[in-house]
Length: 149
Length: 107
View 1 (cartoon, each protein chain N blue to C red):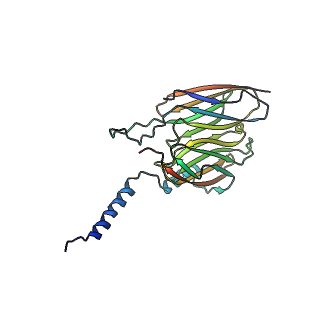
View 2: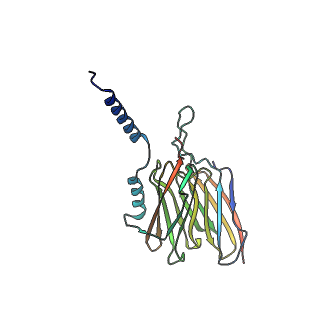
View 3: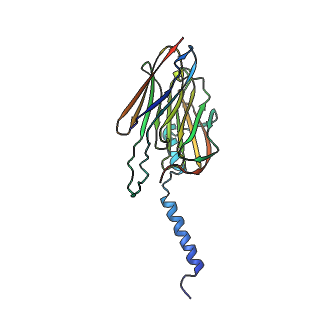
């Protein structure tokens, strides 16, 4: 009897493949996304709410996914959204974009087009001039990933 | 390098109006993670920041990462109090700056 049965060899081979994929997929992890958020919030906890994320539920082409963010805010000199951080937890790097607003903005809203490598979460954190933090997240299913490769 | 920029900014507004500003610039936003057909890495080339001022005062800005799609599109708003000029700048990794301007009459 050979040292390794056929089934044993298959299992062993599958194990190697899984290990290689895990080591080489070059994606950011949710932990890296959290670290990016912690840098922005200074470690404080953000409340849920006030943020509307407009993203497709299913992105057929991850190379260009329309993203629009609106935060409910009076946007006057005393109380305005100063910064919005957007990160994702499945791209090669967690950071996507930061928007910076002023009371002259008239509204805390901005839109752009982003790349998503795979089905992943897009996480938004908004900071107000008074130091309040709000957060929201959306899962986007991606059919064809968009980070080259 | 950003070759062409396109702006959509209203030319007129009433005092107190919140207007929408749309900008687009042609740029590959090369992530630095892709390889060419010979397997050589393609160098990173990214517009890292965008800024808009109105009559010299900061209005809106953005820090872009490689996760922004090629030909970066950025849309934002402005509350109009007076006539004036919007100035837009796109800054790349290597310090190259592309600029554009648009004027608005506020009544």
